[in-house]
Length: 383
Ligand code: NM2
Ligand code: OGA
Ligand code: ZN
Image 1 (cartoon, protein in one colour):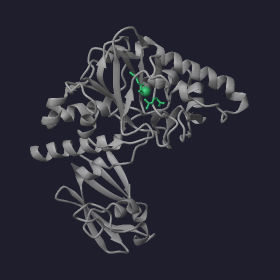
Image 2 (cartoon, protein in one colour; image 1 turned 90 degrees about the vertical axis):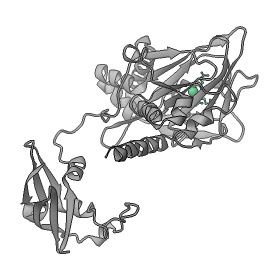
Image 3 (cartoon, protein in one colour; image 1 turned 45 degrees about the horizontal axis):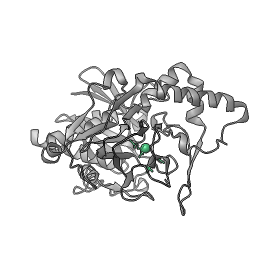
Image 4 (cartoon, helix red, strand yellow; image 1 turned 180 degrees about the horizontal axis):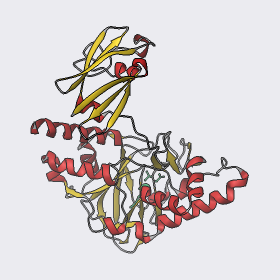
């Protein structure tokens, strides 16, 4: 795969040529810091044994060659020679020219709309998912790609949602409890505990960090109404950005404020934008919840009208049926949402019958870790 190496900048960089004609450059300091030898990284757990201060600031590449398909590099002044597998260099290359547009997402994220999703909602049966790693892998990778999935064939009983979180990680306990009952109550501490419709929203934007996953399971749902829907916040954000780049810029650069003080002893507050971008412009989090949006005080006076126009347009798009995937949860069904991306809603309900859901929060990093470990295991088995 590697065809040539060329030391540049008096040993401060190196250029690698690949069989497909592409070239990738690396820095001497970067390579030295990421050396894979057992003096640099623990052979047992892979953690780095050295600090940046152990590496001489004047580190350069003294010599480099291709040996057995790998790159062998000698660093001066340390007089240290290490080898980098070609596949590792390929996987960790950072020599890209194109700067990415604000709002970009990685290729693992697949945006969806009603047209692409309504008839292909990702789902698995709990018995199969708990027994068969391949089924679990499919289900978890759907959560990663689409930010939501349904689980069928759970016991229609209290606590069944813990079986779902046990498949990949741990429940995140909050002031609402390890899990919470979602049913109409007389003196509700939260409007979720009523029979009112709930506009599509993300949960707990007033918490920092926000819970990254939510599971809602159904024990009984025999009322009229009470349907669920989900909306891909990343798809809606992209639509807003396409038609109103300045509105997108305002919602992503001005902080909103969220708060919850609905029960005694709790006053949660957070200051975060409705559309959050990472330092490199990556779209990382949507926060949208009409019930807990506090007065917005971090938008310049001159921009407030435009900010509200963008907020309104964002809400209109969120309510646009072309983005909405709907279903009615039945007893023994649950769904999981990536609460940093996918909004969920419910229609109002009334009439005879009973509606009893339970909800809990969990952490997406744990889910992704479990998925990556399963994928790694499958890869090793195939080798
Ligand atoms: N509940 C269901 O984030 C919210 O306030 C939505 C949360 C009460 C835990 C509802
Ligand atoms: C919630 C919520 C939806 C429902 O509990 O966070 O949005 O279907 N509930 O009751
Ligand atoms: Zn909710």
